[in-house]
Length: 335
Image 1 (cartoon, rainbow, N blue to C red):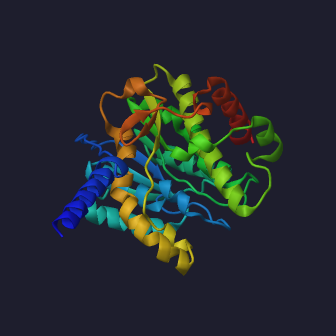
Image 2: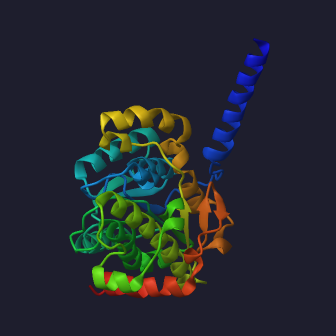
């Protein structure tokens, strides 16, 4: 019996070590106060309705965005929740104000699946807000379907919407240096590919195929776009005082189970509870990239668990990053 208990205790200890030191990741240790600064966080509510929503999108959805905004509000920042759904966003504003004690939290409508909406949001922001110190490109979706402008939904929302938003707000970021752009990518960028010729012909990075396979591949490709965008943005902003970072937040247990069948929830809920990050843990790398002092020389790098990490081979391709920028510019800035 004692042997069994010893083995059981050892297994539990090993589990705790793995969960809390590996899977659960590191925490942002910055204690910086950012009172007087302004931050935008996209994707505090889901940005688009898609025909197929998959659990892997938990890397950058509602829970992480709200947790990020709450932490920034607690540090004294003026926080703009840039979301599509007014009612959900206003509820999030209420919660964050109540929990943080900071009334400088507000909602501004933004649908990243519409370039017109991105332009309208940027115009309103620039007319009403004198500062922008942190732009957190957090929103992310996985699904089939198309944006209002005819782009594949993952490419259109996860990359192109954020690309246009960042470019339209770049001058304000440069006026408030030192400032930062933080873009939530995912480990799945390693499975992605960017074919610019396909993008130009199809306004997407995946040929038509089954909805399930399409959703997975397009998501991976869009997350690679996030990495390449950050790399090229850093190259273009060198010496300006604006730094930028992409990151993997971890696999996060948020609201994705609501979109699944009962039998799927039955099997996945225990796994999610045991192995996935909660929303507070899931926003730690975002906060590290937004707040940590001394990481400015790492602009353009990709982070995971609050540490710089190597990206996949395509994610290190400067010529591909430049080409993606040029194609995105033709779609977003002049389209």
